Length: 84
Image (cartoon, rainbow, N blue to C red; front, side):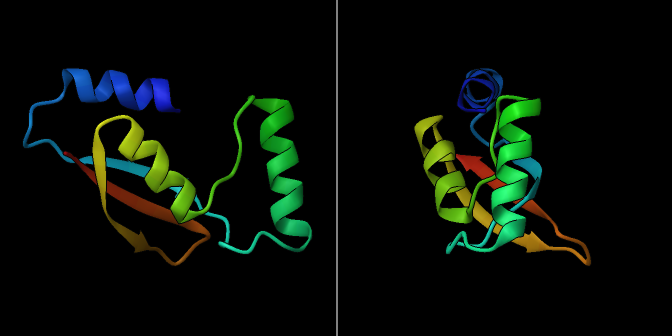
């Protein structure tokens, strides 16, 4: 994901807004849901489920500031970021 975000940052103008739809994990990753989804993501896509703090680190490493996380009526969230 960081490679993709870095490529987007390289191509994006300084006033860009990036929106990512993500199934966020709780900060305290406990319970079967968090563990099961993480294993599925690792085995199927090579990726992983992340909490907000982990996403913030990914965005910052790619040159973005995480502006806000928008809740939806589902487990998915809209993550908004802007270039630093």
